[in-house]
Length: 358
Image (cartoon, rainbow, N blue to C red; front, side, top):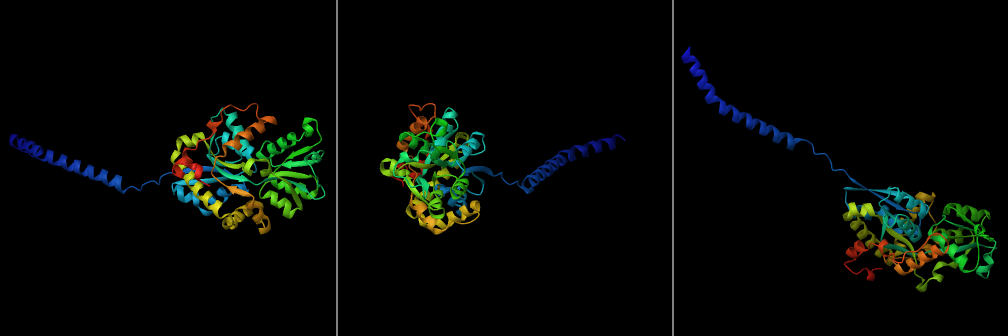
């Protein structure tokens, strides 16, 4: 019996270490197989929410979305979600609510939002478009001077948008008052599509709006341009559209902002050099919103009145801020508005000196 017990203990001792090594090897192999043979979950895409309007003045967004410019620059890991707006104030409300990362928008809504948020909500990253705004009157409403606008019914795209403030400032400069100010001019801040309908029905006498709606009123509705806004500016240069970024997005995803600005700059250069080449793409995108494409006799004059540029146009921007204050849309204008601009992405994309870009 003692001999048998001794043998069993001996066998167990000799078998033990060997068995333990086998177990370790087996478990290691099993772990390796489990880790490297398990399916790898696809990386979650980053969602990039971009706002813009169905206007030729937002051509970079229209062409960039349709032609895949931005998607190629950003790569497959980024999902671009487009959001369309009629005018700037509604677009800025979406940005303030955290529903937009980047957007194309006019100077006045961008400025107002910057000031409302104590400089925290957004930054202007680059210019996009200059020009394209005008006061169009109906035939039969021919006038010889601004003073004859007294008593007229005039429309703008939205209360407080860039064209709305431009019209109010123009009226004030010529001693004219709206009904809300005790004067005789009735203003209708409505959407651009409603401007077309009201103009056609004779329910308004004119509208201060932007391309392609200006050319639509002239070509399709029989209006005429009483005043092209470039006549009011030195060198005819004034900002119509900027590329704007939400500060939270710029902080959390600076690499995506840099890529977008790079694509924006490249596309702006191409648009500035050959705007007519992009008319088919622009028209296709506009047709998706308006239900039908615009005829060449509308598109060609519309795009000819625009200048596509990434320049920040800081001088005219400051003048626009003063105008907004003059008509009561800004309580005050800060002495220094340079903080609204973050041109570091544009400088990097341009190779240092953005003043030489289109």
